[in-house]
Length: 60
Image (tube, rainbow, N blue to C red; front, side, top):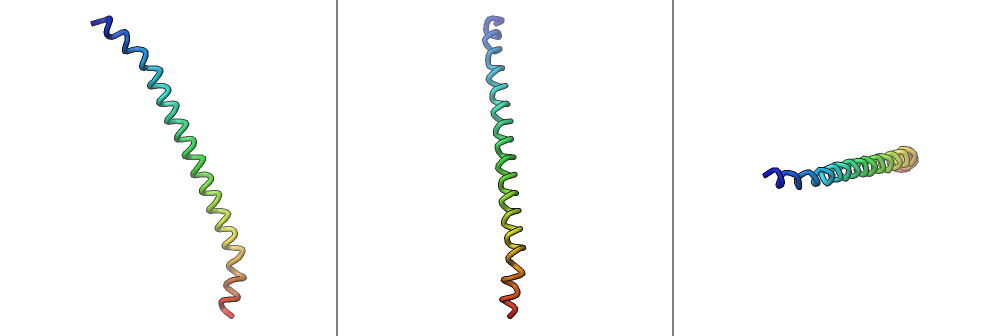
């Protein structure tokens, strides 16, 4: 039995690698979210800058 328990130790680095992969994925997801937020911010800024002109034309 002890000889069977010894081979179970090597998978630990694999688990660590999986955790690192999860962290990298989370960081990548955060980067995507930040990019999306930045894109939304640009769209909102453009909309705010253009709305008064478009709105004035629409009211007329």
